[in-house]
Amino acid sequence: MYDVIIIGAGPAGLSAGIYAARAKMKTLIIEKAFEGGQIAGTADIENYPGSIQGESGMGLIQKMVEQAKQFSAEKVYENVIDVDLEGNVKTVKTDSNEYQSKTVIIATGANSKKMGSKGEDDLIGKGVHFCATCDGPFYEDLHVYVVGGGDAAVEEGIFLSKFAKKVTIIHRRDELRAAKVIQERAFANEKIDFIWDSEVLEVKGENKVEEMILRNRKTGEITTIKPSEDDNIMGVFVYIGLVPNTDIFKGKIELNEMGYIPTNENMETNVEGVYAVGDVRAKALRQVVTATSDGATAAVIAERYIDSLE
Image (cartoon, rainbow, N blue to C red; front, top):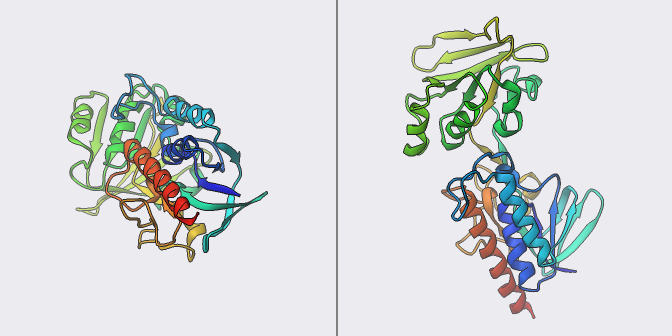
């Protein structure tokens, strides 16, 4: 029997693990793949308080992992397939084990949203990508395209300009949604240009992106983009939002219309002893600093909840 089970090992989950284990609660962190979540694919962390220039997302995560280990938080790499969150004893079932706990902190994060374009699924990993840090270096001295206009899209476009000879950002509106300081850096970058008011209808190719079909949302004009003869291939990096990882919680906990988990300021869900933190939670700002704050809050409130049971 654990005091707290944390599902997910991104910044929110690891922060919760650090605070829970440091409070001498018996803590288990369950992660299905690798630590870090969205931040693992981020090249530079500039706005996390205390981070130094050149700090990478993975570097920051490894420090959190070591802290959690230092305070004796247990961790397993298993895929959670079902949960029973009712009553004082919660059950978390993975593909290989079953665990019980007094509290559960949900930190399952979110995945990148797909464009929904024809041909997209067939070319994921073959020219269509969702992680510039992971796949950007494959496009050194080539022309790449970024789909999106928010912070992530523009920041990753700037990052890609370190490798690519040219970066074109395709946005469905006529102005960016990214923070002004990020926009200024992009507009000042000679390698970056923009295609406005446009959406990707289709990506075509056999084992690589050979064509991309765009539609102008204002004029209806259809444009076909192909790589130059010198390039032969092109990369398409998609940053148009997130989809919360909450499928296994449907019918077990309250979700909003977008699939996110509503909580109060204490990270409490509508089920006693169950908390949601990080990108999976319904909130205004999804950043590393808010994720770690969520995790710390949930762990402290979980400890108080356990004390009230005893």
